[in-house]
Length: 194
Image 1 (tube, rainbow, N blue to C red):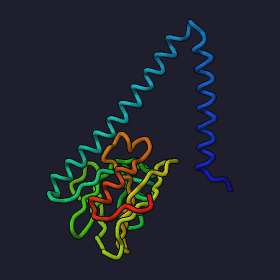
Image 2 (image 1 turned 135 degrees about the vertical axis):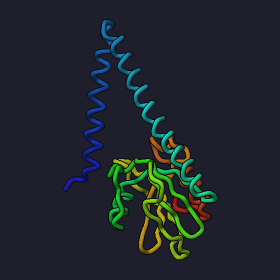
Image 3 (image 1 turned 90 degrees about the vertical axis):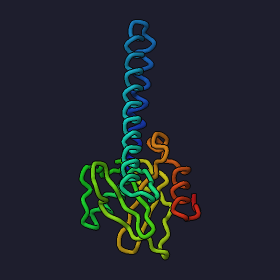
Image 4 (image 1 turned 135 degrees about the horizontal axis):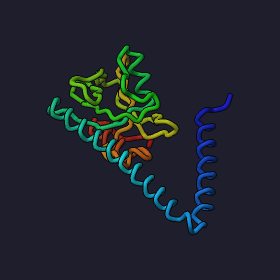
């Protein structure tokens, strides 16, 4: 059986090549250059606006959780595909979360537990107890076809896997090892494996 992620990547590359060839053929026609430039500018502005809007959501959610949990270590993040599965395994709602990951969330690390907060809610969806035998781990999560550096917290019963996003714009595109390292450091865990 073929790997669906690999198939999606091949299809995306082929569509990209076709789009570039078509764009170049139209750009070479002097009468069409204005339309091409307008389309490119519109696309850049649209993508930039979406990315900045998501980054703003992550920051607002982190600020709200910091107000509700004074003294907690607040880790802004994006869900991974694993996050929704982990929620369902506990019988917790993954409502309004993209199953492929990429939804803004925040972890609030308290001395005894790490809480998972979703946007627009006044309490955590679930929490993972902080257990010395299970220190937080650096792993590769899944957000769509990407495999960003991610943080996993496990207590033997519950777990959560997220892609830390202190720099939300950078994390949107590639995931950030620096953001993962910062989250691990703030949780008091040495960074290894990345």
